[in-house]
Amino acid sequence: MLRKSKIRSIDSKIVFSNHVGRKIDASKLRKTFRVALQQTSIENFKWHDLRHTFATRLAQNGVDIHTISRLLGHKNMIMSQRYAHHSPESLRVGTDTLDQSGHN
Image 1 (tube, rainbow, N blue to C red):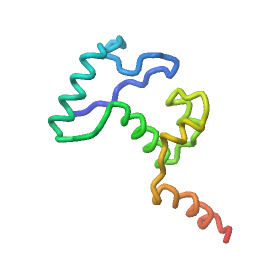
Image 2: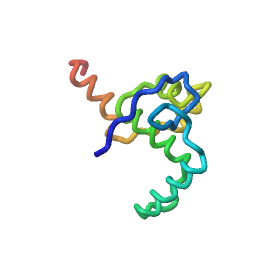
Image 3: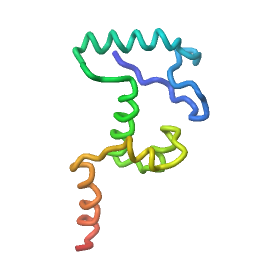
Image 4: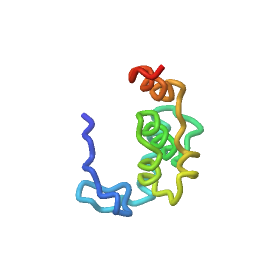
């Protein structure tokens, strides 16, 4: 069964920690990632792609670009906008909001 990890402080420099909050060895993390990709037959996927996925899922779920920028640690929102991609469905929420408010 999957468990949600504890929420860490965004002030921490550690992204991946073990159960006591200590940094996980980078080589072990890379090896585990490679094994996971092999076991799931995922091809042409890089570690850095996870940042794009994270930002995109946040954007598609209505998280504002300022928050996404902070969570990614970017100094400006221009870089965050390169990471966060909307789908047509997530953009529709904006126009649906106007429809629901009675502004025709």
